[in-house]
Image (cartoon, rainbow, N blue to C red; front, top):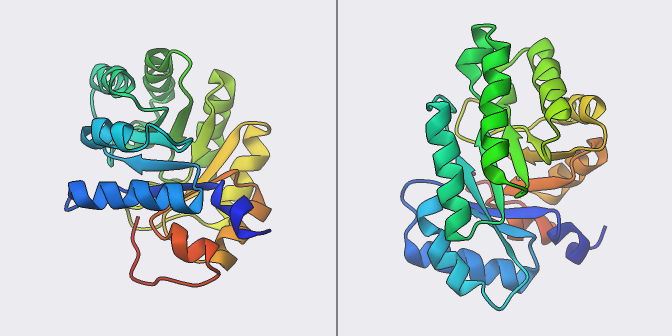
Length: 223
């Protein structure tokens, strides 16, 4: 896969708390220069990114209920509406892991449904935080997402104890079928990114996008 094709898989990401306006402007410049699919940023920076990317085809992706997923459902839905109003093109929401662990599957489903409704057609990715889930829990969460018709299931926030694995990506793809799968957290080089794509990932979330398409590694990069 050439670098131009690989770049279109990447949500170029900056979500850590210390990122300032110059960091976001640089992220946008890099996304345009290298042809990444989107920038993935916290919602407070959507207006800045929207202005910066106005004359490009780079999309804006933002996160909801991030990074724990334990917000009130009404808060997640409101956050989604406000982010879309501000100009985001995609929503990445964190599933309520605690509810999964409490076996409250209907509440999990209702939580996703409320955000999906708030999206009103804007693509929704549901972050499972796979490192905290059993195989059975991953399967059940993917089945719910498939049933609801979300755009993507996503492995990780990059803020927990582990990120994407080839095994989890393959399992998720097997369950969701034609729904997209986003691998995120710990994808820092070309070899890893290609392994995720081979396993079924249709999008990669990474702060190391330049390293990934440059066939190099960047061990200092974080999600």
